[in-house]
Amino acid sequence: MINDKTAINSLKSYVNNAQRVVIVPHNNPDGDALGAALALCNVLKNMQKEAVVVSPNAFPDFLMWMHGADQVVIFERNRKKAKHLVEDADLVLLVDFNALSRMKNMQNIFNGVDTPRIMIDHHPYPEAETAQIQISVPEASSTCELLYNVLDAAGFSRYITKEAAECIYSGIMTDTGALNYNSGRPETYLTVAELLRMGIDKDRIHHMIFHNNSFDRMRLLGHALGEKMVLIPELKAAYIYLSSEDLQKFNFKPGDTEGFVNQALWIEGVDVSALFTEKDDLVKISFRSRGDFPVNKFSEKCFNGGGHLNAAGGESRLPLNETLERFQTKLKAFRSDL
Ligand code: 5GP
Ligand code: MN
Image: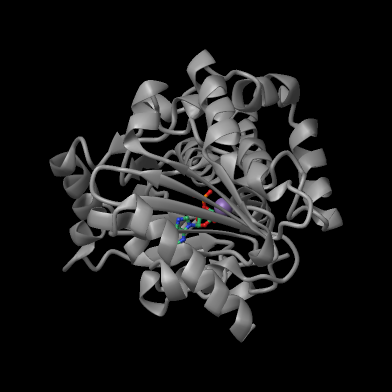
């Protein structure tokens, strides 16, 4: 999976020589970003380093069970501490993103800080200024799968505990929808096999991540599918739109809409889906596609975002109804240019 021996050797020597390491997942961390960050933190602590995860903002409750999650420093809640940790670190590891902008406001605390940064990520098109050392493997199902292989290649696999292995497994499962998509490479299963050998409790993880929903979330899903989903057959598209009132009505908590966008893609004849969620100052958008429709390009061009070919995100500063109109217009134009 990783044929960049130079990058692995650099990572090895940076890690061996570092004492204080800060690990950063992207804003709105998902299972893959948080899983990779916590696994890495655990491994580094086993190597007798002072390691800490600093996240740009909070993560969903359904990831709270992960080992070390209670010790994550949240930049949005504790800016001073986050800044101090970054300034004091002798190494920074960035996981599951490849552009500094994905840290949102937290990127500012890196201004004027020349601590070396290493990026471990599986998104296409890394930006050069993200990190001096870039371990970028877009074929990987998830950053967690990549991380396992990086640790192995660097000779650090003996430091992977069962707890770290559980975090790694969670990232692979969340990014592939429990091996539903993005999981056709045999190597992914070899990695999963190794994690199982380390004694992870697979059934418990699936329960904690996928089968442990609040009653409110299940009802929000019902509302989204029943009342707030729109099919546009001529554009082979379907979308779900949730206003702040919808969210309030069902006591929305971060992570509650996770996976909704996939369901809109499960409609016959649809190859692009979107989820629009109204936040305080913007509309957050998730895109999914099947086949070769590039939602990352579409989002980059029209909604200030990016991601993978079949899974991307973006945002809009227009009101929700105007955002929906713009989506239709832009999708029509984008389709005709394909
Ligand atoms: P999700 O829809 O699950 O939030 O994100 C899907 C994919 O798109 C993930 O790989 C995520 O990292 C990426 N993504 C989500 N939001 C953004 C964004 O605002 N900008 C970019 N560049 N990528 C995003
Ligand atoms: Mn990922």
